[in-house]
Image (cartoon, rainbow, N blue to C red; front, side, top):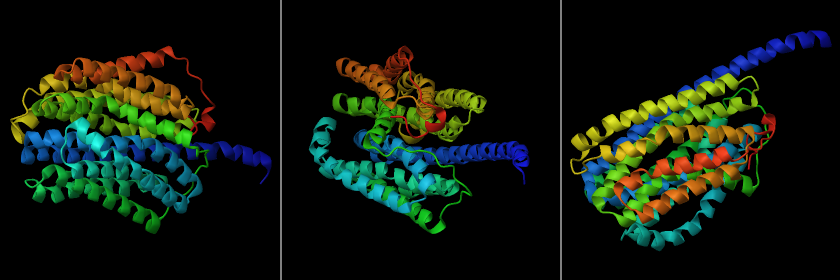
Length: 421
């Protein structure tokens, strides 16, 4: 075949590859959205079932400890993102196993924080706090098994394992609900997280790569690049976690329970729309994907508005009448907090797509840190339920203002995926 013939055929091949890529992106979005929705629903049942079976006092103690694991899982998004790119390029399970070991061993010094957390959160059980730290370490390390299945295209396996893990957690917890429920919830959550990660690793080893071809891209390997994205992911969630921690250290159990339920409803809404961002990132390197990214941004905001609105309308009624009548007047707490959900959904989308475009992670991080600092400062000075519920909105306004006032420098998009720091 002559070079002229090759040139004529190349556009057709490019069009076919682009069409295949768009279909795979749609498939990934659907699979991840279904998995996220089912897992979030089942985890919601666990949280509310704990409230019904163990009571408000125990729930007010368990909720801040469970959020430590949630924070760690969210913070691991940066590691998961980078590890997925590296695994897609190298297909090296040995590197993945080495990274997993590093994360687990590196988390051991965190157990020294046990007495500090006991004092700050007013929790008297050292075992429950230690189990919460272990849950945080394993939840953070689970980014590696997740990355393996994402890089290998085992999306259905990832969704099924996540869903079954949530179901097993409920089944395993119920027998212990009336005997040391806080410690039992921590222990069961830890065991299920470890089991789920092991199953994911086993699937990756035994079933291998399902992707027919992988586009090689540059991925960062320096600790500074990893830590920047990890901290960005952490501070994107903290606005909805900080009110729970501040309430536990300053307010009564009933108020802690109300804020915990409200934070759970709002953070679940964000988790449900998150897969849209995950499936949009691969399109950033495609110069013709501007319309796709624009539609994804609109879909993210629209879904956040709908889900947040449903949370305000249905959540308080469901919790009060089905799970616990002791947690009342929830609408006055969920409403102010839910106002920030669409904005934070858009912020999550903008930050991760912006990083893929080549924006500096440190600048996003500076804006987020300032927003959370203002939120916590106001919450400490005026620690009422209503002020803490408005905390996420305060952090959003401050962080958004800093971002808009900053002039972002970008790098070429072709090199951007995985290299922003």
